[in-house]
Length: 150
Image (cartoon, rainbow, N blue to C red; front, side):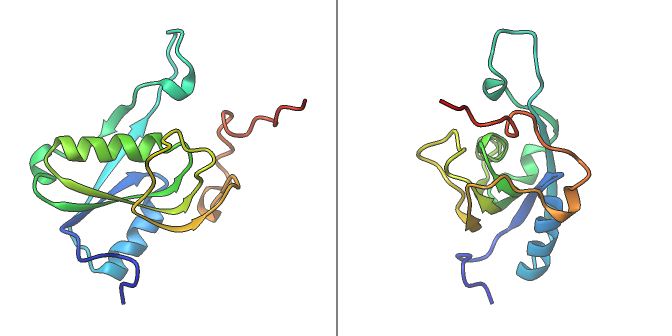
């Protein structure tokens, strides 16, 4: 049963590492066998640019011909700032693919994209999510800072 998803997908692009577990579960549930991966980093540079404005570095990304013309479900665990999944979505579009984004949790309060949101998500939250498979990784220092007091 596919209550939320509209139609079928020609493939899936899983963003590592967060999207591996939800992507695997969705691939099985939706019977998607054409599965690709992408790895993205936002490196810290010595340029006077805020860390949230850093350009993405694609450590791994499929060749354009693997995405061209395909309706592709782009999967990650969470849409916090939205930088990673948006960078991947844009690159799939540039390759001639038709991406639709999917995450377990969507945090519209942290999103840097006021007019964008995932096409599919499990829940909306304002919490910082730590999934069971990542408890030993630690917390991203950008998002773990103490709230400002006034």
